[in-house]
Length: 143
Picture 1 (cartoon, rainbow, N blue to C red):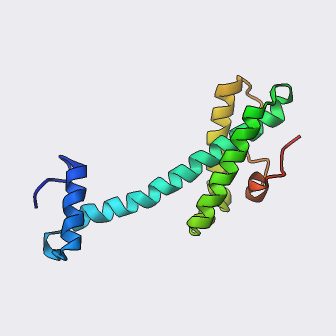
Picture 2: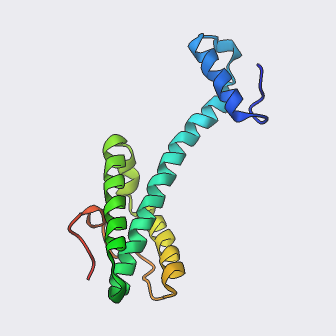
Picture 3: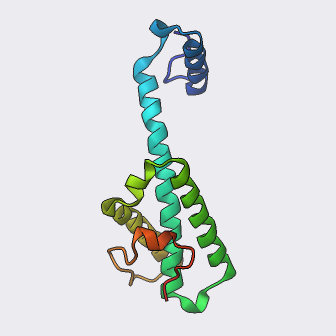
């Protein structure tokens, strides 16, 4: 094997891709390939979680700071909802995570932290106020 995984991951990935295309199975770095494949799934889940947390934080701000509601908040909510819906459509297995109550609670925790940081308020509930379906509903805004 040419480039070690720990030295230059990009060169390593290029080499592994060439080995796969050339069907040179015995030369493959199987352990690190498996790790990278697993990381791809984790990365997609992290992106979804991040988008959901941003969306929830904006919905919290919408509810708890009605006097500051803005077109910018509306735009962020709309953008995040569309991106989340697209991701769930393109990667159906993500729906298991998105509609899992524990997963939503973790995203909620992140959202509350964001909302506290952005508003200075500390009165946000510790548990989600809305269902996963409500959060994605383009007509839903907490009042």
